[in-house]
Image 1 (tube, rainbow, N blue to C red):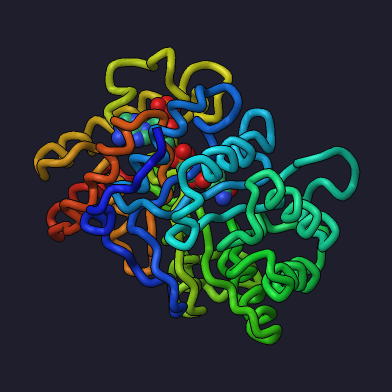
Image 2 (image 1 turned 120 degrees about the vertical axis):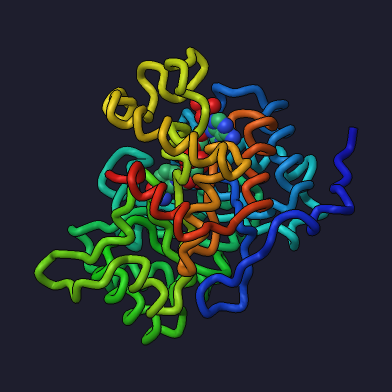
Length: 339
Ligand code: NDP
């Protein structure tokens, strides 16, 4: 049956301005790293995307290599876009990235102009799009001059392939240098996409490298006029009720997946139990509190979650019902939110 979006779709989730840009993003965004490859039923993917859009989650984050196999998440998304979301293209923010390994040979990874622009063209073809809303350099590449990578992002915009550009997992000092280059080119970076959760607080800490000013990534992004979209705010599912009674077979923590045994240490699980008690006292699930917590930082525009079911998505989006923390709650969280 044809999809008709819910009339109420803009009543639930707040939209927050991305840095000093004119763009707003939903406080909760959905990423397609896991759960949208050829290993998952297309119908489940469709159900999750439809529910997300109906709830106001209108930002879908992809990358060239999401799957498995690499490329399949963009292809599946393209299929569902064509069937369900084509009438809503102008209500969607769709992002993609290049940086990690994608195809064989010297032009299939890194930060070269050759790789970034070829990969972006491939992503557009897989998704059936004329342009993406945001294109990212997925990771810093120490072997490519920053000027070259930034020049490729600038060209992605001026050639009409992307409306905005961003960077992911760049250090604070590299972010400041990248933004200086992009300002000179006339295409300031819109956004930074770092990992950030109650169990991974690197973005809050001052950078210690020799070339650094001592500012944290969150401080730097704000000072440079960039928004921040925090990826894996649930620590890949650890900051939920999913692992409180052991490792479920159908979870990402099961053997061979990206949530590895080290993250599931007894030490971390004890922290998770402590945080779950605080969430319960707030009348939230742990997933909801984990999302609200990254959004408490003024520099953070959006929490970029994953979901393997509609139920998870609904639970997580429910975070927006309580985004406020008392200082006593924050102090209690700090006892357990260590990395
Ligand atoms: P999360 O930390 O949100 O983890 C998502 C996983 O947590 C789900 O797959 C599910 O695990 C579990 N989960 C989600 N919601 C709930 C809930 N309410 N209750 C219980 N369990 C829940 O984020 P991801 O690690 O998936 O990353 C999100 C997105 O961030 C990616 O899709 C991608 O777009 C982006 N990202 C970017 C990176 C980069 O380098 N720029 C790197 C990593 C991610 P399960 O599947 O086991 O059910």
